[in-house]
Length: 408
Ligand SMILES: [Zn+2]
Image 1 (tube, rainbow, N blue to C red):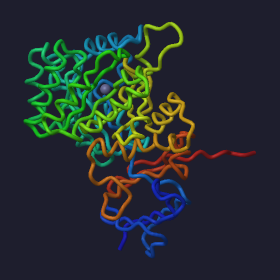
Image 2: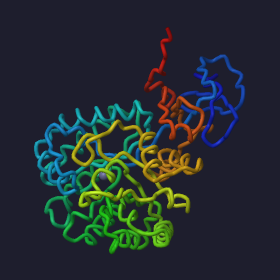
Image 3: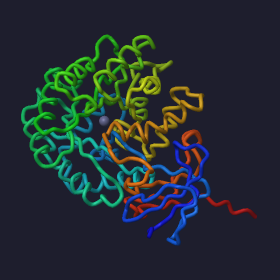
Image 4: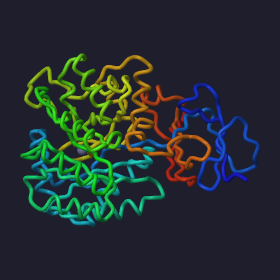
């Protein structure tokens, strides 16, 4: 006995074939053509079905604060300083209210897995962390949330921060992040973060190499530490905008180094476009790392939202299809396989980066299902096609109305 059958679905990896998806007890029971069952059904008419979008990098705790921050120069330094000042006044309820607003947007855009970074330091203490932990429980019906605590304003130069990070890890943080570029001793921070990860047996996600000077890169030390600590496939780095300032020959060498070490890369197009190249008056460099090039060579890569309505990015609708489209447009991708590849970077590759085991439309997997108003990943990215509805563990978690034209 099935609880629900979705009829005539297109799957991203099975071109052309229309399949039925049978759901029972919150899991996918069958994926085959013409399932015989008299369970309730939904007719999809060939629409694309995916196991939900995967947001690998977002900051829920500092979203929606434009009403209390300036964004005059649009530089990284200004953004960090403005948020540093604002977060002293963050309360748990304030963080919860803003973060839930952003999270609900993401749910409505079809995101079902999310890694959120949360700032922890002596100014904000564990208030944001506590709020996001409540949020994680309260929205479990719609989204699986991973909490990555990290020191935005430095670790070795900021007494008390490491103790707070450790306390957060003792109290349920899922992973640890870093931000060596704001530390007075970047390599020492990288080593301390690895030590915490080992102590708690958790994955790592760094903010890294976030400028356009290619003469040095912290990713060298991250790769070294990943190998030294045996942390392959458990480390991700975000931004890495320096990679937009090197030629393809060196890019291939760096890409191989990252792949050999087991370090994944996340590009955050909206933030990188907004904050990079501020010293230029014209012919402004885009500052977006060519992640499609790295993914082509087998590196695990993702595209993600990062910031929403704050001085790091004063925009945001939490749509990962929009982020894939933005990247494809900025990177000048024309080949169908490259454009469709951007869809992989907000779905399957993003799931791999987050080490999600049961991600897929297959028998036995959780019935996490999002129906897109189109038939394939290429048109989803090219035309910014919206999701129509989603099921989380078999239960309807959101619905959006398809556009209707009212002809005279
Ligand atoms: Zn970030």
